[in-house]
Amino acid sequence: MLKQWQVTSKIFIMGLFSTLFNRNKRQWMIQWGEESSAYMKRVIDGFFIKDNIDFELYMENNRANNKLMSLWRPHSGYEHDSDLESIIPIRPSPTFKKYFSEEDFRAPGNPDWFYIGYPDVVKWIQKNINHFSHWEKRFEQYEFGESIPLAFFREVIDEYKKNHQLECKFKTQ
Image (tube, rainbow, N blue to C red):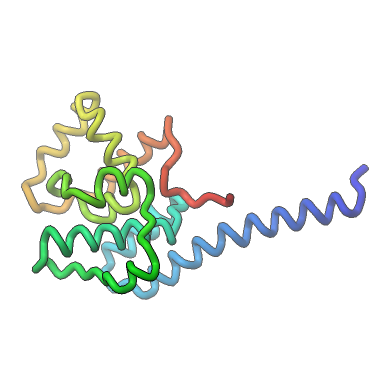
């Protein structure tokens, strides 16, 4: 029979876990409400919330992305606040930091949100491209600069998740 303190501890732990998860989801919902693009609302709901992508880690990767893009593509509209960086250093995810925050090695057609939210999936695709001939044929049907359907990214991410944990998934400690 469970003692009162055991029941209370279990309820507290479940409540803490729920609060942590909900905090992350709430941050995405606030971003979703502020986002004006219908496309990005679909990305936030169908990818970031669905996969429980850590909002704060995504924002760190986004800061690193903006820094790189403002240096490599100065007239592209990306803004980087170097004064803020001197106060609050950028702390991107390990894969984003290693592969995407210093050099601009990106395949044409992939949107920024995919690199920022799923850098481990991007590297996995790049390392294993020979195993994805069925995807490569589907990818080739899109002209340079044309939007790749979100269903394509969903399929790739779901395939990755069969054998890997998403690097930017929200962790409860």
